[in-house]
Every structure is written in structure tokens, then in C-alpha cells.
Amino acid sequence: MRIKIINPNTTQMMTDTIGECARKFARKGTEIISVSPSFGPASIESFVDEFVSACGVLDEIKKGEAGENIDAYIIACYGDPGIHAARELTDKPVIGIAESSLYMASMLAARFSIVTIIPRARTLMEEMVRGYGMEHRVISIRTLPLYVLDVEKDPKGSFEKIREGARLAVKEDNAEAICLGCAGFAEFAQSIEDELKVPVLDGVVCATKQAELMVELGKKTSKRMTYRPPEKKAYSGMFAHFSSDKPATKRKAAAE
Image 1: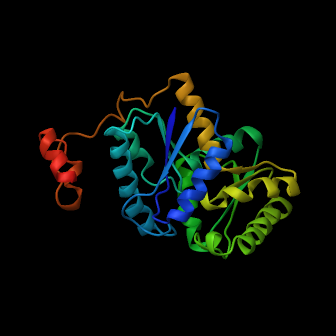
Image 2: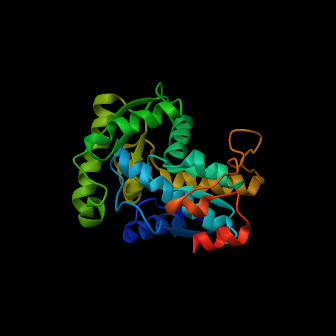
């Protein structure tokens, strides 16, 4: 099977790390394709970043559907930007790393915490948690003095901050599991779990395993109503290639 992991930011080093992490845990025979959109923010730390990056996610979904022979998609940002729109563009499973880790944590622990990036991201996380109906399970959101790209610049220093945030979540908030709230935190999960003796979940790994399961079970995104393809209409400007009321040849020309 072929799983396309879309890192919604444009930092290739982070995209490569995400792909390596997924391949480490993927089954033999699963092909992992990790990509970044050709446009968008270098990192995602605000509402503006999230909304702009969602457009890049949709662009990569369209590329996947145009002939890349993809069996499932993963959105590798802990806000799951564009996830509902992405599900309208394909009948393949589309899995967000936040949704995936939250659901898995809920099967492993009664209450759990999210350890994530800078304090301004708290509201983004709170709204995401509410959207997934997990307010009663997420006991705390621990933000850190840590930007997304700090993980690539200073892995050792970043690990210590993430480790301390997770430790406080367990000690002070009584968290029974930890969700790492950034795709860039993937490499630290096992070390923190070994130390704290509670499940520590990286969303990239959770999503990879769930994507494999859905493909093996032959499950597809429901097109009954909510996630059916968008109504046909014209788009203009930079989004012209999203138009669905033009002949195929014109749509292709617009995309080029």
C-alpha cells in the first residue's frame, strides 16, 4: 500500500524526519511518501498559518488523486489543518495526527494531556480538542517555550523542554498518558515513555498504523452526505485549478 504523509509546512528537513519516523513503524510492504506543499508557511503556530497551510494540504490531496495511486493520506500537523475539506476530495482514508493520537490515548488512559508548542497555540489546541469531543478526556494542555522549528535547530534542548512538560503533566495534572502535540516531536516519544512509565503517543506513528489498518480493512471515506465531493463551481485566481465546472483539459491547463 502507498500512504502519503503531508507535512503542511514547507520545511523539508521536518518532512524528511516525519517520513523516517513513519517508515520505522510501518509494516513491510507499506510505502511511505512524505511531502510538503509547494507553498505555505515554514511552520504552523497561529490561525493564519493553519488556514494557509490547509490550502497546501488540499493541493497535495488533489495531486495524489490525479495519478499517484495513493491508498491513504495523513495530515502531519497537530492541528489537522484542512482535514474535513481533504475528506471531500477523496474517498481514501484521511487521518490527522491529532485526531489519531487522541483516539488512541482514549483507549489507553482515562485522562491524558497534550504537550505542545508556544503558549499562543493553546486556543488552537483547545478548539481542536472540542471539535473532536475530547474535552472530558484531555485533562491539560501543557504549552512550552518552544517553536516548531526549534526541534530541528536544537534537538537536545527541545527534548529537555518536552520531557519537562510531560513530567509536569503527569506529576501535577495527574495525566495517565501524554499526546505529543507537534509532528516534530516524534523522535522523543519512546525516551519519555520509558522514563515516565505512562503511554506517550506520537501522532505520526498513531496515524500511520491506523492508516494501514483502514486500507487493509478496505474502508473508505463515506460519500453519503457530509464528505461527498464539493458542488461544481468555478474558482478564480490562484485557486482556479480547484474549479469543477470546466472541461478536464481546461482544469489541467489552469493547474499548470
